[in-house]
Length: 191
Length: 442
Image (cartoon, rainbow over all chains, first blue to last red; front, side):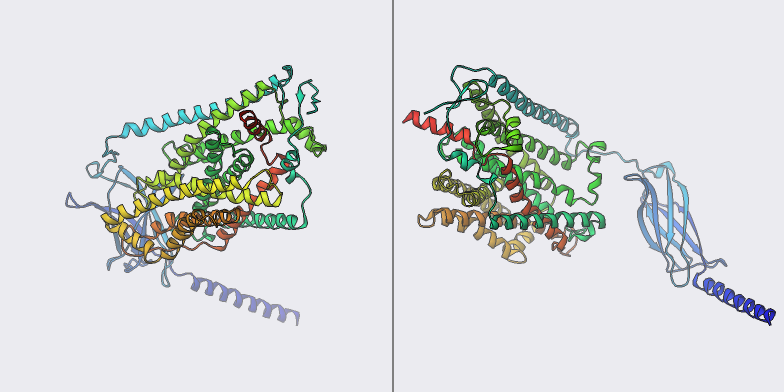
């Protein structure tokens, strides 16, 4: 009797376990594969393209999926900065024009997933041809760049002097009042 | 007159009859109504602090600010409160330098108002920040070209100047009143310590007078500079309605005008509550009313110049904004400001029948409220106008912003009440000096 009950319990437990695993497996949509590459432009006036290819586990392309591109950057600490987003075409490729300002970028592409496919992300170092890199050189159209350096510093000195003058005035006034208060001046006190 | 003697054997004459009681009146026991008012102010201030803590713990998303209108009512509060403070300090400084004989009884209240409004107003950049706990990064990650850094520097500079301008005459008054009968216990010890050995010798008077004159000279250009720097946070931005050469003087004039109005309100309330009618004569309040009217005319002139020059040229973006202000979305607030803040107060001061303490109080209260509206109109509508595309943004303060603002407004009278619990409400030594000079000239 006890053995039969044990068997029944084991059976029920096995069924429940299988059901849970099956349901869990069903709840997780299959994860596609995402790869990043660079598609250099054939024309000098056009930007190179960052491309991300989204493929199903069996290798087929996934179209109409929203791919977001990020680059690793230094902005209040290291973080991925949003660059742009693009949908995949019929061959599963999303393209984003990108003008590089340095030779190498750590590019991250993400797909948030949908009802059919799970989310996926990938990161890759992309190296650009030096001829395509546009170096950032700040220019000052007003030619007043030197003032931008000098003026705040002059202001800082002026403000420092004002603070010092005010505090010194307060200090020396109070010191004088204290000192003069202890010397009787022969009746020249408060009226 | 019979003389008493200080421990250092300097002679002290008795105060003018009634002056001691008047100067120390706010230190006495509160009436039931007075106590109820203080409790109400305390509750409102505590509510404001609680709302700020809620905002701090939840995030700035609980405010009405959004990606279009990124500066809301907190910025309005900041500029309004700091503007109020200029009025107090400038009134006192200008009247001192011009040796106006009616300044004596009002100078302490004017300077106290400047200090209280500045102390509260200076906190608003923190409320407006998403991460106020990072404020120390202003120093550790110093960006010397940042307007925000210079705003803070300007406010701190002005705070130091106002504090010194307020504190030095208090030293003399504490010395003068340290032996008063009503000063007992901890207050007597406080007055003794705060007096810095003041015994009223001619030399001490001379030193104090010279220092106060110097600070009065410094504080006037300082106030102008500080509010101009504050205006640069807006006018150095390429945004229609902000990017204007008139913004500096506009800010300064608005600050003095609204500041004088707040001083009138504060003086009238303290005069009434503590029965200071004998020491703060109607003439002093009417004179402040005249000053307010003159400043109102100047401000009206600046407003007229701004609207006509920008409207006549009619640059596309500016024209849209002006239309929204004068005739469309913001027109009710704009015309409420014009009538409430300029026309009606001027009419009240203009007519002899309304030129009374009550009339000045109504005029000044209207100006105070109107200038809150004006600052709202200066900052919010330009942000709602799109720089790209046609979509107009919107902003309405959330309950959190309203509670914080109400708390800050309540904190100002609360600070003043607290302040005059520990320092005399009247500048006793200054009143005596003026009175004595008047007697000598007579």
